Image (cartoon, rainbow, N blue to C red; front, side, top):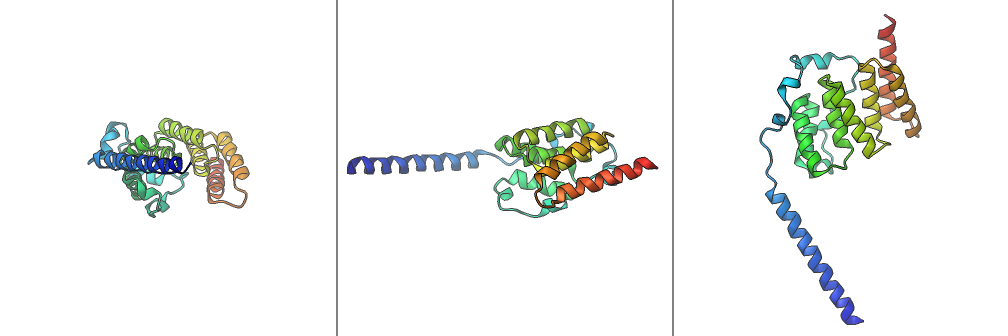
Length: 194
């Protein structure tokens, strides 16, 4: 019995050492890309980058510049967040797509990519990424908010209101995503009345 316990301990230590070495080798062999915006064709982006800033129904991602511990574990994800905060939508898409290769189950990544595409007014790509985020996490509040705002940009008030109802159910206490989408819907209604 004592020999079995000792053997199991040695085996566990050996497996842990091999896993740590493999992880270190993987991290060391993954080169950081120099130009992540090359992953996004500049031909598909609108000519006026500043025009997206004036788009009236759009929340902000200003908090993206703030570093969080888990975001800093992936330098591409962190770079994508910084690019979002700076309004560099193409670079954000490039960095975030690289991060998605390593973390395909993180719903934040396709949500952020969708946000960048929406700011570039590429709504079909934005919707595809929001759907991916919600497939990974149906309770992802930010993805519901951003998808609702994208529906407003597409002129579909009914679909935006569906996402507002989902947020109302998800947010047990008042949450910023519900408030932001509610305000965007109110602004949309007000502009439609003119």
